[in-house]
Length: 404
Image 1 (tube, helix red, strand yellow):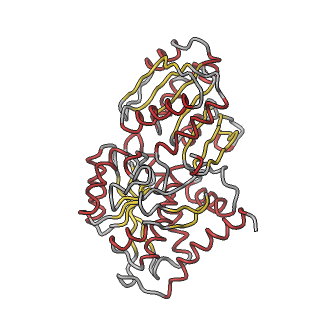
Image 2 (tube, one colour):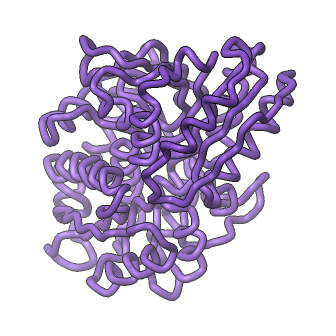
Image 3 (cartoon, helix red, strand yellow):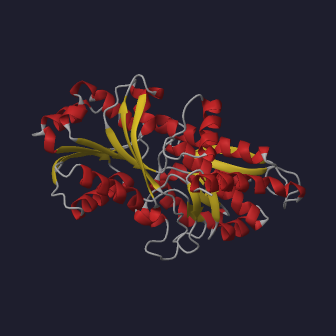
């Protein structure tokens, strides 16, 4: 049997197994099981939260169609994380107060770092699908710092290492780096990791321009002009974008007249880039990106079903944030099924060491570190008005976790 067939059968089996328990009763009778998805649903990053909710909805629809969990249907509720640690904590606390102790999602690592120590007192189990900071889960095999926090997406180190290696190997002549990013924990940490990794692979990097701006800032005209003016030789120049969401979109729109692809030998952006590219009306520059997912990366029936059902729901292709929230709901559902309960303590016990199937392959949440082992997807895209959603996927490279 091929890996393709095994993966397809495995994902179908996981959802089917959830449905097979329809004859069983849960710990709250026939009441729906609430799973909360928390993400930024207002302000400049609202599209990210919308994608998270839509991805989670697809997972819930599939689970309910298969019979639910423990004989009960799943009800998805959501809350707005906004952009600060304080609002992140408040959003999860509000969900807990409404009886939703099973939470997936989140985006801001600063928010997750503030929330982690409070989860136990809130009686909440959190599967984060968007917070990437290394310190949220155990490092180098160490115990997880927060007993009630688990991560099914990649952390900063796992995302950056294979991206840096790919760029160093394919663009060894790109040594003069211009940097534009968000001035917060993930923006600066990922850039530090990238510098170290690129130089480890033999690139003698010279940082010619470095600018970090607050999250939410949208007017970058002066910074773009200064950045481009400082480019000496396009053949040796690289642009590192440490922004995401509407910030990346605003930057690229304001830089459109400079034709960035001609100014830099390579443009690099870790994080969720594809949804930005499709807003640029076929004019997106050539960009190399690393994150957890691209719709073209996994050629199997499970991914095809996810893509088709997401498109039917939203009219758009799924993006990283959609997929990560989808996987987070699958993880929470599998944990509840394994625990035979929706109570926080048995669910957190079940999440530790949990293995479950996704369109990207089987994931296991390490029992000690609480970090799952998803592959990293490196994607090279360019704007093309004739391509679906105006973005041509030139190449995807799926890097297993052990290689990242």
